[in-house]
Length: 261
Image (cartoon, rainbow, N blue to C red; front, side, top):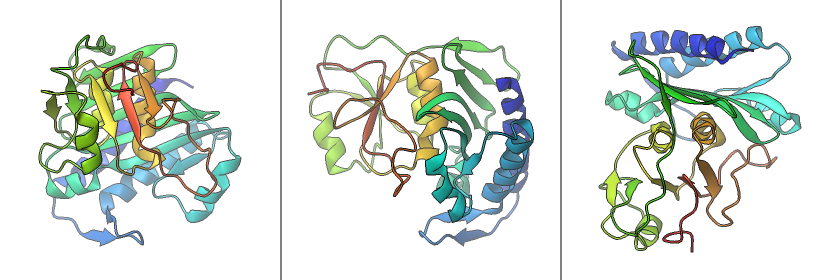
């Protein structure tokens, strides 16, 4: 299986998503009160059908999969984990900060990931042991890697909300005075750390495993880490039969004495 084939599928899903994005579309409400659009479902079907055809022996879990699939996945050691449209709220606002995400999980580790932001054709991909890459439109492909860890507590580039910072985030940031806060939506935040455009992404509010897996794979391939905040152990997938929620985590090149305490 070549990652190029996965990229082709993601680009196909992006075409369908952008076709809907440019038109008027309806917004529905799922059982958990989160929004759903025709774009979510179009990308879901393209990716699930395409991956099933590409690797018939590897099961697929999508955010939009049936509940039965979400229950069965706890028995899987290798599987595709996809978020057909991460940032549906951003898609509805039409601000461009939404992504299509595909990851391959093996024994709890995202070993391959593709993240595409269709609105500006920014593509990230990575495979453990083979490196991470970025391409904007038809521009040349560039290899990406995390930045060196800052050697002082000031001036860190940290991903978070400029206007709606949670109490937990404010407490975390007390150890990094004069940080530059970078606002960004969806899984692009992980990719900004992967390409060295940000130093740190602390996530202290709930996310689901499909929100992070593809970007996580890109981070690992770029030499970075995604760590559970309470233990600083690597974040793992499909370890909880009851929930698909991630714990609080931090994305970084490596832990730093300035915040790890």
